[in-house]
Length: 291
Ligand code: PEP
Ligand code: MG
Image (tube, rainbow, N blue to C red; front, side, top):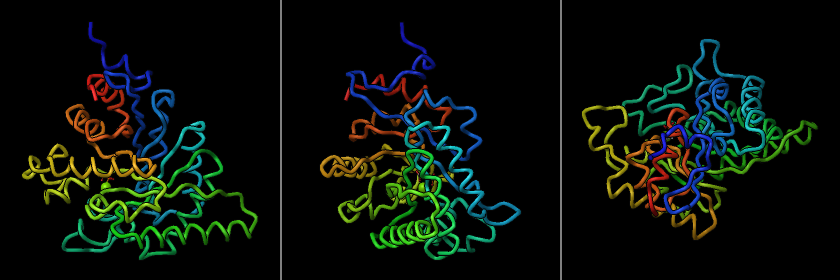
């Protein structure tokens, strides 16, 4: 008799032929973790930090951010937690931070906006460096398009770490990786080999490759991760990572979609991060695929 999807929740994920697959969760804020048993997942593959921004009280201070990040790291009890620096703009406007643009998906968003507002970015960086002592933190940068963005962000992390060290504040430097969600990165990943890891953002990567907005129902059929052009890019990134010992995961919604999972595994991915509601279904879908 076939197992129910729920039977998979507490089991490590593996394909039909026994290949292990890492399955982490995406979380949108520290409250999410109250309802997730850490034993059901391999850690947090994406913690979005936009929830901290866009509050009536204004942008979050360092202490508020530090407490939110530390809480998730404590909950994870040593499993990895990948926190993404703020990805405002595009489909995630933040009043008082993002700017009015005629084409926000191609505008000042993600790492571009953070680098344009270094005083705000430095607060988040300090909060992350301080929180890093509470667990296995990894930090990733959203919407990276050129290697200079990675280098500039890394320099800011190093400057703030030095400043915390000089002030005697406990901190630690986490591995710094990038989202692969702008086609320039997926096409030429070798330009980004200084990144500690890659995490494929299939929501944005698909919309940019297919020129079909992620939030427009009338072009939803075009916005498909299973399109051969999108899958070829994903396979290229997965292969590059394997050849150069750079870990590659995927944290877009496709990772939790049972219809997309066979394509992603066949493209070479072995590390997915899914919304908590899809954890059991994703593990069940993985168990059905022979790779
Ligand atoms: C993505 O683009 O796939 C992603 C995970 O990031 P977000 O959905 O927050 O843009
Ligand atoms: Mg994205």
